[in-house]
Image (tube, rainbow over all chains, first blue to last red; front, side, top):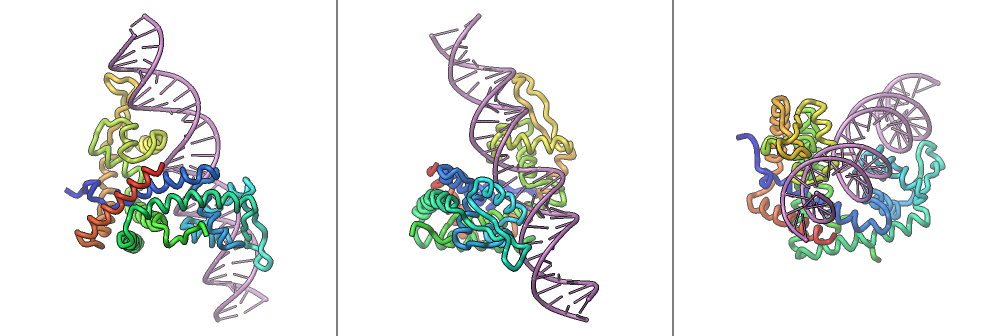
Length: 145
Length: 145
DNA sequence: GAATCTATGTTAGAGCTCTAATGTATGGCA
DNA sequence: TGCCATACATTAGAGCTCTAACATAGATTC
């Protein structure tokens, strides 16, 4: 027998947790009318104003075309603005608008609420252990490729 | 300060592990020329022949329209066949074709290889602990909604 | 100076994902 | 019989995601 039962697959449990996380964050972002990827981009933009789309993509863990899609939607809603870089003409500097910052803060409140509820389910020791084990997952899986 | 550092957010680490998992499984499924969601559907279909699309969606943790999309692509490639149910005319019974089974087995070999490599990174005790902690994540997050 | 490397940005195309809405079929119940 | 609840299937529309390919600009190197 080459196969493996789903419950034995660590991957199933990782996926399940991630799905629940995405659903919870999505609900938390709903009052701000942004998606989770949009919220993630806005959050990083608040911290690093003027960042390039490619660098933002790296921070968010997506590819540049993906970030391009997300930014296009944010720009259409007027939550960000993109202006050519002073020296590197090929680079577009991306910044939050005032409305973008307000929306980000609203979404962040919901997201932090979810994270706090999640953290409350563990002791400090468990929390650190979980993070360590998840880090090892990512490490091993990245090496697999 | 209402915000929270990314490294402190358990969610970031869950997401990162899931991303690495998806990338590794995607690479593992590449020889069989199927996507990870397609592989998941094929795997369940092998275990439950004749299952309805809605039930399959529940097993795979996606919505019926999503499963519809996946099945449509699988059907176009001739990996599955869908026939009307004998009694319940509204239900379509879905089954693997011979080619579908072969493709599933090829993809499964790669997927199991990834899972074994992942499992090898942990002691038996760590593995059980990780699964327990991830289960608690899903539980808490589902309750959040 | 010209070729090359590196980084950014963009487009095209395929596929997955969701919510919302609609249609259809089956079974139970008044 | 007719109404209703449940379940399945599908369509529409929006959005995210990837790979592949191409274009551009700046930096390095010969």
